[in-house]
Image: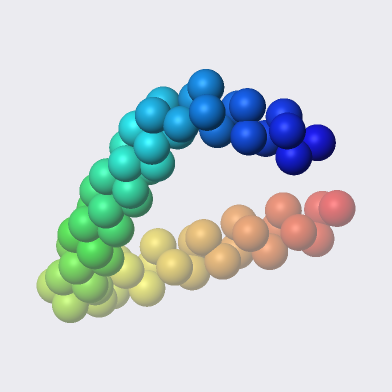
Length: 70
């Protein structure tokens, strides 16, 4: 079994490194977008508190209805 792993690492080593680098880049991008989205939501809540509460209430009712339905 370990021979197979060593063969795979010898054959696909450079490709695996590229995949790892791409995954790190995508992770960093996702973190940045998540932070931006979180800030936009925070600003929306500050600027429109009544609408934000209405949306939260609507989502809560919908989720409660879906859970109860099971």
